[in-house]
Length: 168
Image (tube, rainbow, N blue to C red):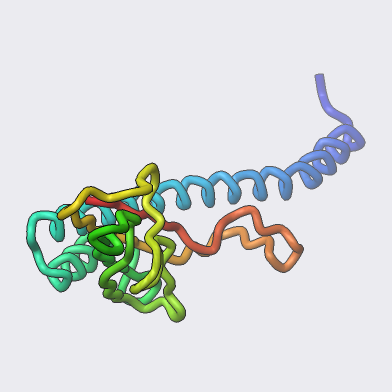
């Protein structure tokens, strides 16, 4: 059966209406996949660096390991690494306390979600540390810029950074 020119015009019109919607959904799916991939890379970097410092490696060695393994991300310019040492506040007060903290990376204004030096530490499920126990927390943060950026339209469904922390 032969289509008339009218039917072809209707089909083209339907295609023209649906194509932008399809492209937006496709770009959104690509962005979700990229965000999940970036999150996995950041998680692996934080665990690797925490493993190094927990085995007695220096903070510089942990920074170097994250920078060497950060492909396809670039932690030195678009991210950062924060390494915190957490101990008891005092011999009589077992609350987790950030004793020391060092940071590396290119993100301006990089702040720790674990805590600040000389202040309380946010350690999941731990309210008190046993005497003599020292924890190391490694935080890795990297910016995330989606392909389909809807911030200009007031749509910000993606986070501006991906983040992970590992405790050892």
